[in-house]
Image 1 (cartoon, rainbow, N blue to C red):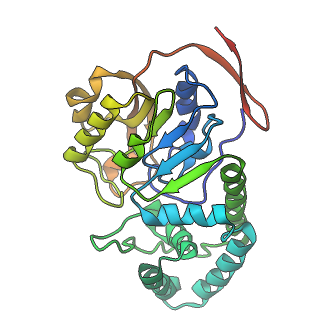
Image 2: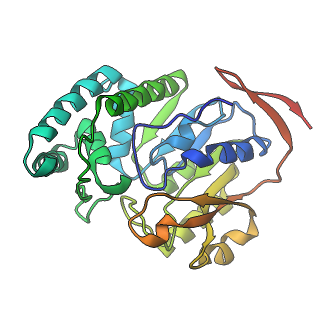
Image 3: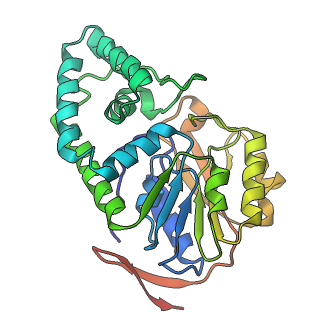
Length: 304
């Protein structure tokens, strides 16, 4: 198996360690590897960027900054070199700023909230507290500064630039379409044979989603996925040491569900730093398949 591609956007609850598990379920769906990948909650992009599907990718998110960032990579506006030059400059200004860099962080934050520059978006996602991506009701960045000295070391900047390089290679190899629309609009585009992957905010847990997430949203998602002719896979949480996800019993139990223990190392409160039983909900009978991934592609070579 290839190493999982980690995207340049950092956010709480990223699915990096769960990608192999999700991909195993994708491969067991019976969908063609040349079908379309539909992703209504793109977020950091880690699942979509590592998808085994070879067809076009139609992704959406209501957070305009995420979509703007990926479009900027796709268009060539953001390159590994341009990001390196930007981060080296901002790192220097951060180290020269008063209050251990807080003054410069505030300046970048205020600039971003006016100009919405995708470079500043990456800076804030990396310089903010605990990997959070949070916005206030006005849509302004609302995450406190992480007071870690030498935040943007040369090695750290190189790591981000390498992530941009890998991301650029993926989204320019296939047909990728990035849309700043609601999840309903993205799901409506799905047809029979497509794969929909949904990673919505986890209902009942602290979330940094751009527009928040309510019971009404969860029900709307359930109704949309219940009607779709496509295969769908939904990531959610099943339970933790404190409580159960009531939406499993209320909505999702009519579909197939598989679970896995997962530990989140970051979170805004103690509850979100404990082990969580992750759930994947899907609307198909799994098929046993044997798959090999070489350096260029994931190749299905036998069906058991």
